Length: 148
Image (cartoon, rainbow, N blue to C red; front, top):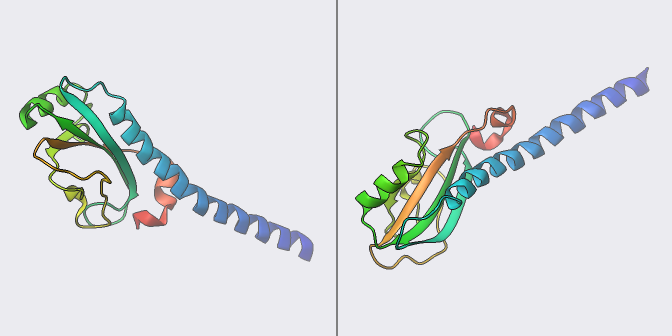
């Protein structure tokens, strides 16, 4: 009987640890998928994709909950308004394909919590960030400690 109890407890511990290890991996993959979807969009004329980044965790605001962001850094001869109009055609909702000027390597929208930065040196006023917030409705959304 003692052997059965030890086996049950050990199995439960292994499952619990596996879920704790799997949750960050699954959530990071969701954030990466969000960035990959942006990078796969066709670029407007006179625009080049420089870099893509992503992050999963508690990124903005208060309270608990996982958030996912994917972003691409683009360099364009188009204006901010022209880029916003272009990417509006690809946005499924107000949280997709948001375009803003990018003046340095820091992603400013996330300054409240852990930072996200581009590796590319930004020189000039023709760099823009295009970002989207991802979603993941699996159990891993709740089990990742980074969301609490």
